[in-house]
Length: 140
Image (cartoon, rainbow, N blue to C red; front, top):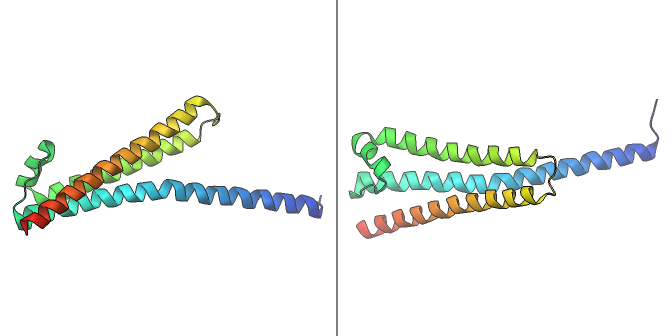
């Protein structure tokens, strides 16, 4: 049974609007995660450069023993941790967006808390990279 022209136009607009929403959601989720991955990678790179070329010391007590014994294992562990944290934030947001009642106070506060946690981790990594760069500049 063929639909009339008006139904086709309304259906096409609906599909287009849904695709635009999905495209926007992908962008919104992607940028903070990419920034987090970038900062985690820069932390790894600046730490390795500082240790290998300038005699810097890893201050993280959990990672310092790994750095002194095996630099390759340190890089793998550091990057794996960065990727894991990124995936955790992506998965948390996916689960949150599947919530049925997205207008509830609980949803709103949970979404704010997730954004705050993401921003906090990014800010921490930015400070860590800045500290590493300062150590590298002063050592040179």
